[in-house]
Image (cartoon, rainbow, N blue to C red):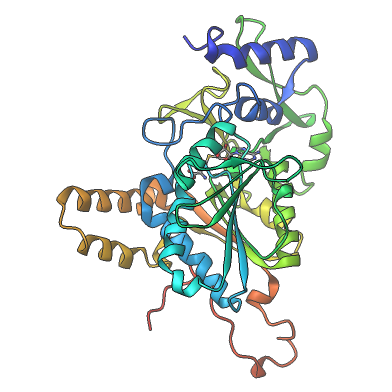
Length: 408
Ligand code: SAH
């Protein structure tokens, strides 16, 4: 019913017109249109995050998730000598739940942070989702950013922390910052390539000549500029997905961290340059044909962490990817669960806590397929002159989450 008619069909009609006028488009162009077209994109219209929507994410499952991430940032802040100010920059904050849980931790640790100037910077293209974030985080008391300023909206969190919204990472002011990207990189547009007898060909989206108003995949008749640029000569796979937008953003994060300090934490499903066809759609928590009813379903592809690592160009050190269940265990999820269970007498609440723990940690649920990956300044992991006189330096504090939790 959602195929060509009504509001749900608007994106398909738009794409059919475009394809008739210009011919096939890359999968990246198709994905960009379907997700973030300023009129009818899936995220532009609000996305379907949460139980009543199309997909549910870890921060929506349990408050513990965001709390442990908040502690990760505090731990890095302490390890780097408690700088006087930091910005927390979240890319693609969805419904704002993760930032809300992190802000609660910051507020509980207010005495520790009392001399630190903390601000929140959200990078969000969807006007609908930024409204939801403003409602959750400021109680609806956000205002449009003044003309000429880089933030399009600003407000104050319920806990008193200033919050700013931007469309692009480049609009966020420079400075010592902690970056967070949870289920963000998987939503960025990918190019797809197929090895053929005649060499690599890019996968494109075209109109199906057999079925009216239906889309299909075709292969480019010859190699495209993207084929030349993105396939490595030593590639052994037969099908490859590349996300250049993710590469550009990681490059920018690495430059900013190299220059101003801080850290980035990326959490997503993904692989280390080994998987092939991972492009898929979700609607109503079920797999959905990526070419059907564009704009009405979430489209996603696994993050290639080896590509992200490469795109830091050695400007920062990287840690991970490490599995979500290991990262959360190293961050002390078991202790946190025990405390919450002890504090609650309500059976329903206790059951909910155990159920959400299981969702996050079970290898068959979210425990194994989600990964954590971090960018850190080189000096955070190795003393600059370690090679010369290693014995004279005190050891650097370990980075939380990426090694076993040691309780003193
Ligand atoms: N981090 C949230 C939401 C994940 S969904 C969670 O885990 O629950 C992806 C988010 O990224 C949405 O908020 C979407 O609107 C945003 N987004 C997608 N493409 C974007 C882009 N190019 N720039 C900024 N935000 C984008």
